[in-house]
Structure formats: structure tokens, C-alpha cells
Image 1 (tube, helix red, strand yellow):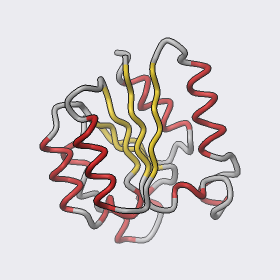
Image 2 (tube, one colour):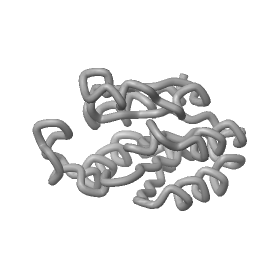
Image 3 (spheres, helix red, strand yellow):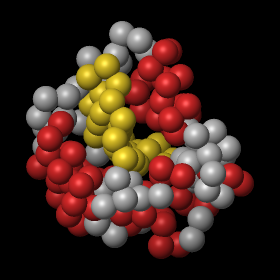
Length: 138
């Protein structure tokens, strides 16, 4: 099984950025733990702050991987193009948010991308990535 984790803008700063919202563990350390815990699954990680690069990665893996875990960051609320890219591919996508988007600013309450996803997890911290991974094992 091959799973691609894709993170969008500013998520390269997890562990450093606003720890009261996002926690203090780095995404790299968390991904390594996931790879150890799920050693039978090929887990790949990609992060970009650039919308077009996220779309390119979705296109690249969206017809050959078993699942995609996507945290599009702020693009979740603004990118019709990423929503369209998710709709265009065959690989199922689970949207993940570290913070609870519904407990934050009102503009974050709307996900343009979520309607094209298998499911949406929000507010479970980095553990949301593990829960998304588990959803592909069922």
C-alpha cells in the first residue's frame, strides 16, 4: 500500500509555529513515527508553500497511489484549483487539519476542498494524520 501525505503552506513550520494551536512536535518527527508504526505501508511526505506545486503532486500520485492525506493549509479555504485537482484524480483523498477549523476564524469554517474528499478530520492535532491513514486500512 502506498500513501502520500501532502502538506500545504506554512506546515513545514509545525513544531515551531504557534505551538498553542499546532503543538510542539515537528512534522518530520511525527512522519518518522508513522513510518515506524505502519512499516508495512509505503508512506511518502511532500510539503510545498506553492499552490501549483500541490496541484502537480496531486496529479502525479492521484492515479497510482492507494490514498492521499492532504492538509492544504490556508488553501483549503481559497483554492478552487486544488478542489478541482482532487475531483480530477482517482486516488481517494482525506483532508486533515491539525487545529479545529470550526473553533477558529469564521473564514476557516468553509472548506472548498472537503467536498471532493473521502472524509475530513479536523482538530485532532498531528494524530489526525494517523486517523486518516487508518481510514485507508478499512
